[in-house]
Image (cartoon, rainbow, N blue to C red; front, side, top):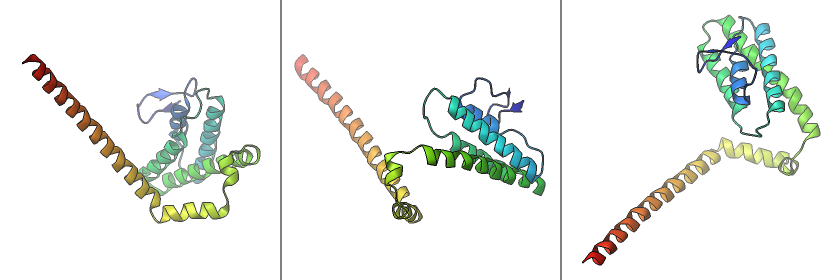
Length: 172
């Protein structure tokens, strides 16, 4: 049984949702050494894929990203070279296992967006990210949203003010 890093409580995989199981599996302790890490990472990835298969709630996203962040944090906290080797092994083992499943999915499942993608369009997307385009687009979208929220709040205050003035005039 492992310890859940966020709660400090012991936990097991029975009845867990995808994100909980992801944290449980990718946070499971591993003995020092690269081979131990590879085995742990592969098992964690299989637990993740099994959780996805058994999940009845549909896509909620973020679980795999959470696993990557957990592994990156573990690598930063590793105290010595053997502990770092174990975490590097865990990362390699997990991604080697996930690659097997992704290869299967790529051969057997598809979407229109995936089918439309070309290496040229993917290179454009990579270059856009290298140039900071998504960050600028996100910042612009956030600025517009904040602006709209401020406008909505101002309009609400103005409507209340007009209503209060109309009430005051009606009471005279």
